Amino acid sequence: MKEIRWNRALLTEFLRSHAHQQICIMDQRSRAFLVGIIPAVFEMDLCSGSLAEASLDVDNMGCDVSLTMHEQFLGIHLLFFRQNTEEQILSFPWEIPYSLLQLDLVPERMDA
Image (cartoon, rainbow, N blue to C red; front, top):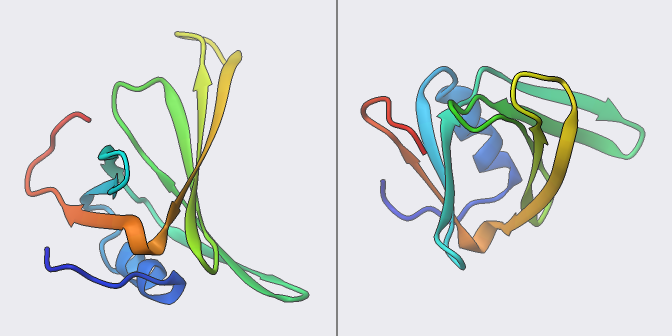
């Protein structure tokens, strides 16, 4: 995918238009990435504006991944669970400034 200067509006529209497709979200600082499918993007009206959120369905990771589109960065929250239970064992917040965000469509299903 060509290099895009991401911002909140562009990212929200990209995720909305590629819902149900497999995408790769990468932090260019560390080259860390997540691969999954965005089922939907939700916008909530708040007193001071709106908030856009989505979940990322990842296979074989044993965690829930939530995405929040902030003004200056993409917020990612990973919540890990003990295998085959609902017991939370680790919560990990991750912020990727839009200037360091890379998104790609993944042509075939692959595991992260």
